[in-house]
Image (cartoon, rainbow, N blue to C red; front, side, top):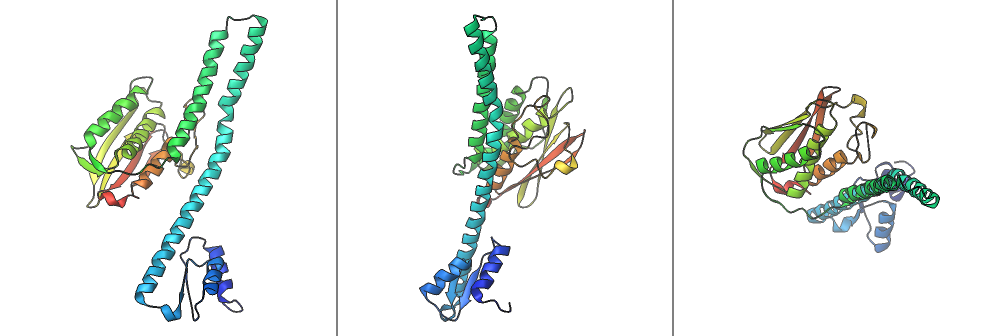
Amino acid sequence: MPDVDGFQGLELIRECHPFLPIVMVTGHGSETLATSASHAGADHYVPKASISLENLENAMATAKAKAQLRKTIHEQQSELKQFARVLSHDLKAPLNRMRNFADIISEDVKAGQLDDLEVMCDQLKHAASDAIDLVKLLTTFLDEPDIAYELIDVKDLLKEIAEVAKSDQQGPCSVVNNSPALTIESCRPLLFQLFQNVISNGLKYNRNDKPTVTITYLESESHHIFEFKDNGIGIEEDLREEIFKPFVRLHGDSEFRGSGMGLAICHKNAKRLGAAISFTSTLGSGSCFRITLPKAADAGS
């Protein structure tokens, strides 16, 4: 670039492409130059006198690792900022309810009006439970336990998940598992939570007399493919980019209670397993979520 030295060029590139791996090569080598290159935005520094195929490969590998770490840190910082904003907002509701009920109880006790005391105490405990549940969900989302792979009987796993999901519903519902007898290698806790949240969402966000989720198995040479089709309310086209973000709720609690964390946890678990989660949907007719899971266990992070 005209009228721009190497370090200025580095700074401009880094400003435009913060996660680009950059290796700087110069005709001279010194600790001072290496430090300046690092400050300007280089991930690695190689003097021309030290250039060899091995050194360049090592430098590029190091630069890629640093760039990936920088991107990961940035994503985590953005995530934490979002959590801080949303948590301060979402926790206010149950905490305000707790304060209001506590004030009412205090006034009633002072006035000797104890007839509604038990009801008010129940409401107070319910508000406290809502706050505790939200904190638990946040802990689940932020927690990243070590991934331990094991052989999993998918039919047994889905049967257990279906029983849990159906027990959470208020009325009749159905989970139809059309997948064959199958054993895969994966991380059971992450996979359980991933499948459970998709199935539970299909049953919960549903206005049918009998909410139903139908599970189908497909495969490619390198992937297991699970499809979860529900007869629920569907998702609007302009909201499809939002549903995997934390705390995104498409409906008020008056119709569908929820935290807005279920699909965000699905997205995170899928990413950790090296899997992909996508969906198609028709508003008013239901959705079909597809989870594409690599057959090789080492594909996960």
